Length: 491
Image (cartoon, rainbow, N blue to C red; front, side, top):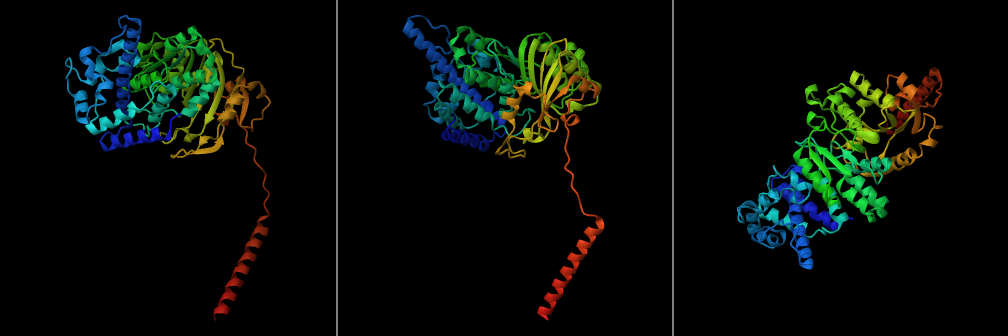
C-alpha cells in the first residue's frame, strides 16, 4: 500500500518538475521511468554478482563492466548533485554517460530496454535530478506492491490528454471489466491499444488477488511471465511507460510491440488471443489503404472505434472473449459501418452484454458518453439475449473533480453479470434487463439502452385551471391587504 509519506515525496518531485520547466505530465513520467530503469539495471547486476560469487561461476548476464562501475546507481547516487548531473549528461566512461549506457543495454534487460532508441534525457538541473534519484532510492524495489502502487500513483497524475492525445482509462472501470471477464490461468490476454498497459496490469493483479495458489505452479509462472500478456502500442513514449508499468508489477517478459494494430504491418495477428481488454481510440479516422484488409472485410469504415472492433474479432481465437469500451455512437450510429459491426457482433458472434456508462466517467479528460461491450467470438452466431445495464454512478462525482462518493453501481454490475440466469425476469423499468436478439435485429441492430428501457411516468393530478386562478387571486388579495396594513402603521 502506498503511504502518505511516499505520496508526499512524489508530489514534491512533480512540483519540482513543473517549476523546472517540464510541464507535460507524460514527459515527467517518462523521465521518472528512465531513472527507475537505471536503478533496476544496477540491482539486476548485483543479483548476478551475488549468484556468481555463491556458485563460483561466471555471470550469465553482464550489464556493467568493471570500467563502467561509475555509471551504476549505487555509485552515482552518493555523488554531489553537480557530479551526478555530469554523469548523466557527459560521456565519461567508455565514451558513455549514464543515460547513454541505459539506451545501449538493448535486449539484455527485459522488454523495456527494447523501446529505448529515441529516449531523451530532459532533466535540466542537478538539484532536480538529485531529488528524484534520492526519492527512487528509498523505494523498496523488492516489494511488487509498493513499486507498482507508486508507478500507478505517478500515472494517476496525467490530468490532460496533452500532445500525445492520450488519456488514462479510470482504474476502477478497468477493474470492473477484468472482474466481469474473470481471466483464467490459460488465457492469452491482449490489449491492442495498450497505452500505459493498465488493462494488462489489472489482469495480472486479478491473479494475485484471487488465485495466489497458482503461482506455486511452475507451468503457470512461466506462462504468466512470458506468454500471458500481450500489448500493441503505436506511440513510443506510451510503449516505454507501459513496459515499465508491467515490469514493476512483476511481469518480467510481457510481449509488447510498437505497431499500429490496424495497419497492414500488423496483419499477421489473427486467431491468437483468448481474451482482449481494451479502450481503443475514439473519434479517429483512417484512409482505407492504411487499414489491414481483413479488418475492412469485417467493417467497411474509416472510423477507428469501428475498425478496432473488427480488429478484435480478427485477433481473437474462436471462443475468445472481449470487453471493450466504445463511444455511445457505436451503439446507435446510422452509417453502414455502424450497422455492419453491430450486425456482425449479434448475428455472427455472441454479444453478451452492453453496459451503458454516464458521460462523466472520463472527466476531466473528456465528457463523451461511453459503454462497455462484451462478446465472444464464435463465427457461427449464438446471441440469444443481450444483457443491458444502465450505470448511473461509478463511485465518483461526475464532474471534473471526480470526488469519491457513496453511490456506486459497479459491485452490482459485476454481481448481476455473473448471475445473468436470474436476469431474465427483470422488467425493463429496472437498472438491468435482457433483450432478445430478434428484437435487436428488428430495431436495425440498435444497441442503445434507451431504445429498450421503459420509463414509468407517475401520474400527477392538478386542480382545474379556474380553481388555480381563484387561488392566485386570493393570494393577491391577501398580499394587497398586508401592504395596506403596513401603510396604515407607518402613516
